[in-house]
Structure formats: C-alpha cells, structure tokens
Length: 246
Image (tube, rainbow, N blue to C red; front, side, top):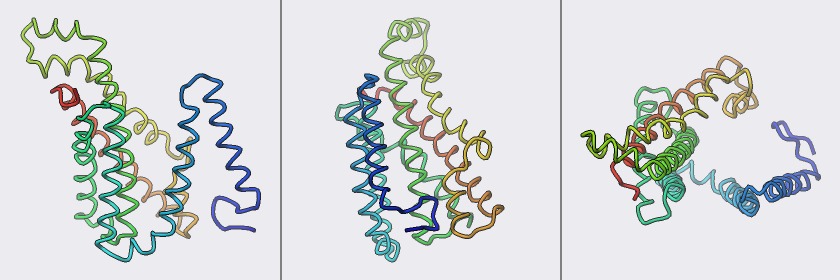
C-alpha cells in the first residue's frame, strides 16, 4: 500500500520498526551505555502514546476545553520529566517554573501578534514543540549545573571567601556548563537547510504548501524555540544557583 506521506506504508513497516528498536537497544547494551532497557520502553511508550493521540486528536481539536486540558497535560509531563532528570528528590516539581517561563511568553507573543491563529489545530502542535524544547533545555541545563556545583564545591567556597554572595558564587561556577544546553538548538538553527530539513518544513511541503511558505513556518518555529529554550536555561540556572533543586 502506497502513501502520500514521507513514509511508505507497507506490510514490512512493523518489521522495520521492530528491527530498529532492537538495533538501538542492542547497541546501547553492547556499548555499555546503560540505556538498553530504556530504549525499549521509550519506543513502546512512543507507540502507545502516538496511537492514543491519533485516536483522540479529532475530538481534542474540536473542543476548547479539551485542547486546553491536552496542553496542560503536555506541560505537566514535560515538567515532571525535566525535574526528574535534574534531581530525584521532592524538589523535582520545581522544573515546572523554567518550562513555563520559556514556553508561556513565546507562545503568548506568537498568538497576540497574530503570527499563529488560536485554532486548536495550530496551538497544540506549536505548544508541543515549545514544551519539548524547554523540557530538554531545562533538564540539560539543570543536570549540568547541579553536577558542576557538586564537583567544584571548593571553588564555590573560594568565591564566597572573596565576598561573593551565595547565588553569585554558584552562578560563576555553574553558568558556563549550563549554557551548553543551548548548543543543540543553536546548531539546529545554524544548519537548517544545510544539514537537515526539519519536520515543520517537510510537513508543510507534504501538506501542499509552497517552499517559501514552508520556509517561513520553519523559521518561525526555530526562532521561537531558540528564544524559549534560552529563557528556560536562564531560569533553570538561577534556580540551581539559589539551591531550589537541592
């Protein structure tokens, strides 16, 4: 069976998917990466969750209340996932702050400026892209900042002895490491069109849009994502420096 999408739907598709999952898990296991089982569970969860969304999306986009609830659900999962990566303790829930700090103002700016419509079919995917980027940025920045402070306690104490305030001393040590969390988004934006053709661009083309329109949409997504992640990283780093994740 042929499809007009990027993927050709054939009877061998399930076989190819299973083979790819097995390959990823096997490589992770043989390479002692410590994520062999995580590859399997992540792929299984992705299949179940995408299946559920595929069945529910028509109902979700037809109701404002359902769309709002779905976005809040995405936000809760993103915050929980990011917080768990930073710390296994009870303070993990505080990751909700940087995830919201990155997503909310950027989404509000896009909506109030009229760049995106308020239709659920538009807001939901844009919110999902921003939440996903902020989730990754928050977890990477938070984890790196926490690790840096734990490994360089002596330098923090030295800064304190020189008269630095506790927050400023911690920032001097952890900010450079946390800032590296923005590198993936920077590289993606710098190399778009040269290394990869991102999903929004390809999706617009497959949906019948012209190349110029697809390029504009992708540019908006990349710039918005870069701004949102930068906000999340700054807030996360400041929260780590203030001891909110300890």
